[in-house]
Length: 230
Image (cartoon, rainbow, N blue to C red; front, side, top):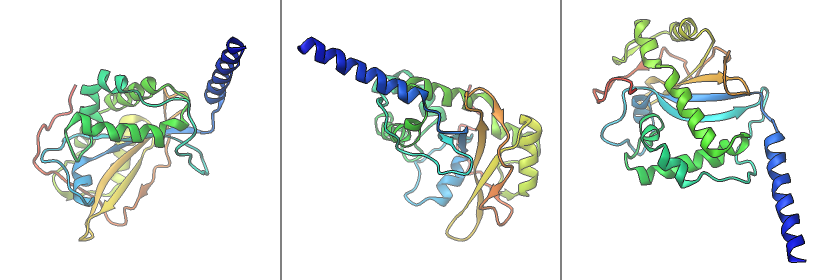
């Protein structure tokens, strides 16, 4: 009798996982890449003493055209500690917690990202983390902007020029997000890239500049390292 119960339990788990992987409730993926200096200037609570001078991951999430966007979906999986340990160096480089450089303390960020967004994405935790990291490594957004004469110098730049620079370099449209500080200065905060549901091909975003009522400032705070890490 106990063996029969175990069989039914096992079949139930398999059915739950099958339903999880067969569900495709989204139209595309959105990779949000953050300019650390802007985050530090526009968010209360402060940043650690040294932040990267390259775009880092803010989040990777599934999106539905027309919404609503899903968060905190039921999932048979959690983000295991082993996944974070194996990808430690890349997580600290490309998906850092800007409030701390402590690896142990940073784990709460990645666990929250999994629960909030990745639970709605039919991919195993390790595959999700590796995909997000590889997607970030694929394009150096700061280099794209610098090549177009848009330099992190504390100067404002027209949003149209920023969007055109990414379109020319990537071959697709992106979205940009601007955020204000307490004094009303508007900063280039994030660049959002859209990816097809297979997670392999960049597709067009809306080519919009959200929150950019004024030409956004591209701030530089003199922190190192300045180069995008390999």
